[in-house]
Amino acid sequence: MRISLADLDKLFERLLKRGSVLLTQMHFSDGTSKRKYLIVLNQNPSEPETLLFLTTSKVDFYDQNPSFREHVRIKAGACALFSLETVINCRSIQSMPRAALKGRYMEKVLDIVGDLPPMIMAEIDAIVTTSRFIMPRHKKAILGWK
Image 1 (cartoon, rainbow, N blue to C red):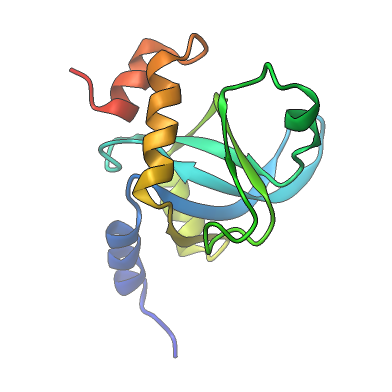
Image 2 (tube, helix red, strand yellow; image 1 turned 60 degrees about the vertical axis):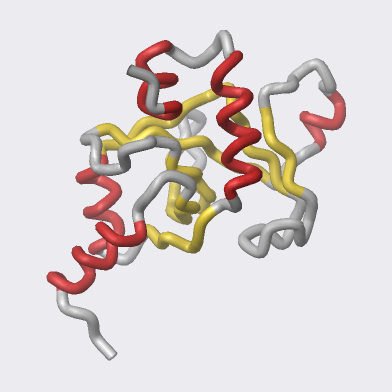
């Protein structure tokens, strides 16, 4: 069954929200490219700039550096979205124009695979609240501060 562009647009608008988990190809400064899961952070996802945290299943760095505390660890199977143990790095925010995300979705190179449970979002918020690495304007967008 084919979905019309108008229906695809409506679906994007309905599915993209705070806590949404996206899966798309990411290109990194070292020239590599990988399919990555990203977490939508904005309290208001209709803002032009979408703030995101990357996830990784390569947890060795976090095991070997216990002083790196600004992350959320999700045990394998604890969240239906992640079959492997996964870390959400809460120190480094990725920013993408909302229009670019929508374009990727419409081109079917970005999937919205589900939503993080509220308990995990609460852990993220607690880290963001006290983080020295996240700019105040990003904290406002994430936490809904005025």
